[in-house]
Length: 512
Image 1 (cartoon, rainbow, N blue to C red):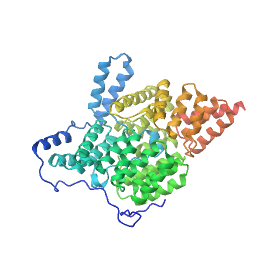
Image 2: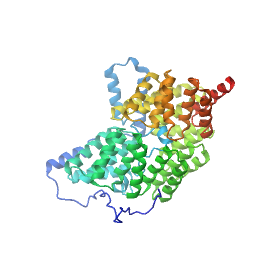
Image 3: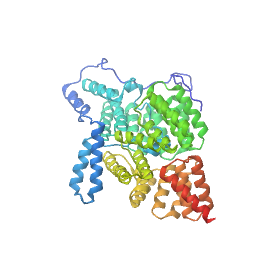
Image 4: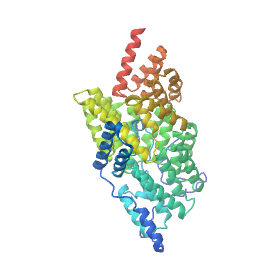
């Protein structure tokens, strides 16, 4: 794969590929719709209350988490009321946990792209599109663009109610123009955001039947295949996408597929080329963060911090870069700096990954009050899980990862099994292995731990889990090799995990 920077993707015949239709400008007004149509459009476009502030969302989630901690005795009606209040305040939705960030799972850096943003921001785009469809309610392309913008905004502002709004907008687009590729691609993005990757693949394939050059559908297809564990097919899909629509969204996905196959040098080269071709601050922040995550996973903390600095220079509010910087700071020994940065992150977006990372840093520091602070972070994960599920998001992988170490091991195992039955990836294999081990079923866990490391993907947490499972099953030599590999690859992969790995190695050496 040789990423290209031309702006005119061409098909095999040398013809310029068609581009997705741009979001219509308000000035391109067709004939005014009849009144009932306009009324329905106005209602659909403005069916949500005022978007709450970040502080309101976080405060609502914290109040809900406090009720979760106190309230095993809460009546069902009371829980429902609290949940409704938190949802109204803009509950947190899925946006990727820390392990998503660590593995550089490619979201869409320009997830709404030039066709929606026109180099603007999401809030402005959504307001503009809402105004446009109120005035021109039969513009199917604008409805599709609005649905896609709502999907991406849900990722960034943590409001799962936006998924329902996105679904209605996309359905409206398809009602106006059945089978249009923009809305089908939007449905693929929505299904992926809800972690329904089988549906995402189906919608992407249908969109590509209509428009083989749809960048969004091409990217969603790669994402779905990756998240279904179909890595060889994902590699072929990335090659096709690169040929049809080369650019940052495709390059970053190609890099991740290479990383999953263990080819880190190729992933690094592709990401550097993607960064060279990044045209605006959003792309620079996205690709530089992906590079930072890649280098951090390889234990190259100085390089990772430089990439995060570049991302934050492009966008000083880019949360994935802030989270990545905090994790690199912690791994590099700057625990105080990591805690400060993660506190900023969870104050704006309390998602499972940074919440667990912050809780573990509190536990590791163990200053007065830190244990209580750590418990609060883990309780927030439980609250987030409930709220995300209410928003239609499948969160079993997040539940399994957090609960195995910091919650109910029976719930962790239930969630991990459910996720494994849906999709068989290296990440679900690792989650199931660790949940089984934590539930005292290490012999059952070992085949899954081996499967998690079978593709060549190198992740220190996976190696740590495998080593601990090997130790528990009496495979001492293999355990020493796995735990040593974890610490050599990324010695600061987790404040608690790395410490546990070192302690286990010490025990193994003493037993020789």
